[in-house]
Image (cartoon, rainbow, N blue to C red; front, side, top):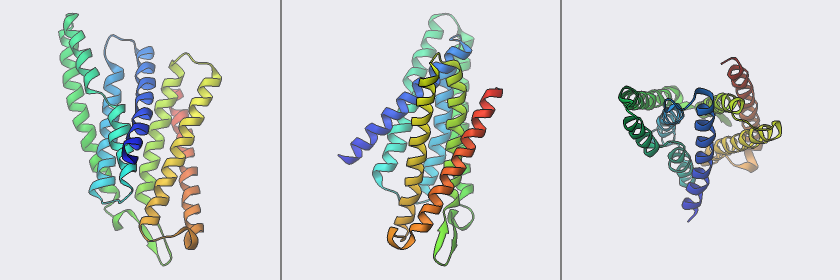
Length: 235
């Protein structure tokens, strides 16, 4: 039951972000080509390659519910094959054979390439010391922190691009960013704490280490989100 709830929560988040991203891209670039669906599928393919390598292949043993919420719920709802198929069929019905074939070719090739790049990134992060810097009495899971920073960059860049294109009041834009960034920082920090606990560290004995890693993750992600928002304004 807990796993179903986790998948439902992850799916709800993924569906909302997919809607905002695809809608924003269509308002920005128009509906002459399925840019929105293509973009969410490529980004989702990269994320599932990266996170599958990190969460499964590298044996990062976080709770099953947490993994299900990310991979099955969030990424499953964020990406969409059915919309890709429907939009391709619409292009064929409209007589846009070239656009339909281009959408099929680019979607398949780009998504496969994105998954491959994601897998390579995940593997390379764990090449040195299994992704951890250890010393007597503590460690830093640098690989997972880099994964969090990559996620922060993607969130900041997408949010910056989309919120500029969607017609929303400044209050709604700020609210969306606060909720999105706050949820990401909380979950990514909790992810690191769970990893430390599952590696034998306890809150009673290693509270300073856990707080230091949580704060370092929060500050680094905030910095990257800020930089990605600045970059989005230049695009």
